Image (cartoon, rainbow, N blue to C red; front, side, top):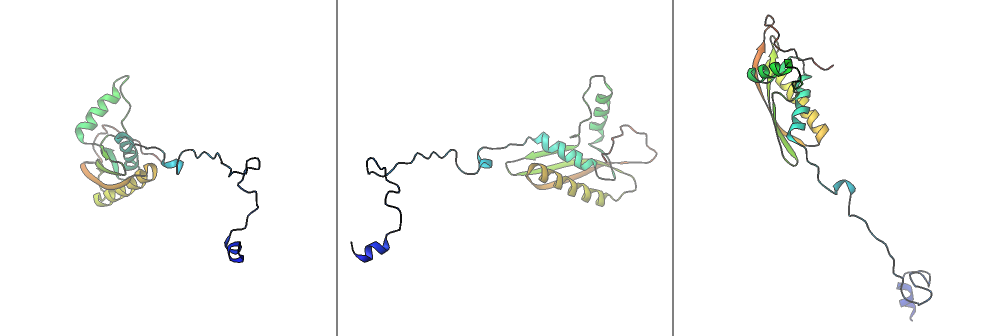
Length: 166
């Protein structure tokens, strides 16, 4: 060998990578299990109802929101709540979600309390719902449409008092 050839060779011990009994290159049995990041080995789907519940709870947390849903759905819900063995109050009442693989869109029906700024309440509901849904699901909320279906007047009889989470 020339001096030039020896200089270009990487330095390594003579027996590295060689089976000492046969003087053949060693075969390594390295088994690579799976592939890539474990978090990306599969798919997570989130049901519409899950997003609806998250959005319903987040909307009810906003001051100025008296109830959720249209008058008809609230009436049926109130009757259902009074029947023994009936379903408990639906946190998703007044919320409709369309969930895709990475995005969701929401439609909410709310009843506001008399005297509050409807624009401010709608803005606060939108911000709270977007923050909660994106934080909990990782989905991008592309739109939150809000329909104010009623105003709760101070002298109106309570047909259903929805407790606000504190």
